[in-house]
Amino acid sequence: MRRILGVGAGAGLVAGGSLVALTGTSGAGLASVIPVTITKTVTGTDPGVAFPIVLTCSSEGVATDEVDTTDITIPNNGLITETVQLKNGESTTVQVTLPDLLPVTASCTVTEDPAGAELPDGYTCTPSITAEVAVEVYFDQSATATSGPLEPSPLPVVLYDYKSNQIATEAGFTVTNTCALVKPITFTG
Image (tube, rainbow, N blue to C red):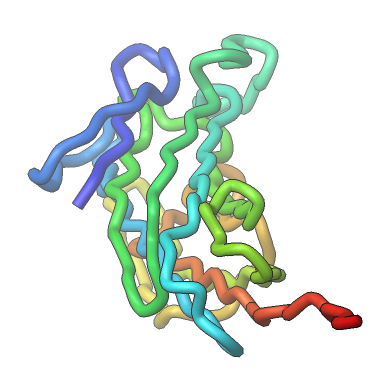
């Protein structure tokens, strides 16, 4: 298990790696650790190599009673990436921690460039990515919430949205590669 950490005073997200999951709550009393699972599948001819998959998470602004996104902008520290190497059938979970001062929004997405994999000669692969997220909606300051199941989501996946009082309880991405072994035509003479 890996984690991406949020640090205090709205400083944004910084990278970290660990086998220990964090627990706790953000300054607003909401759960601040959101597990994001990335799963790799290959259809067609499996080249048997790991593919580099990049998880990118970002946060914008700091949530206050009066939403003012110009108060604190997190241009550099608000964006963090984590690269995982996954073979067909493998998955990993990255623990994404929100900053101590909740942002106005926080989201994650994944990308993959098959050219970054060490494909054997003759293989071509085309990725497609699907996402799902489970959210809780908070109705008041006492953190009364309703939870939902994992459901399909557009990219990027929103982990936290101050305006709609939603926080993800978990998120997942499935990266599917359609691969083929293209044999060159050889002429014998």
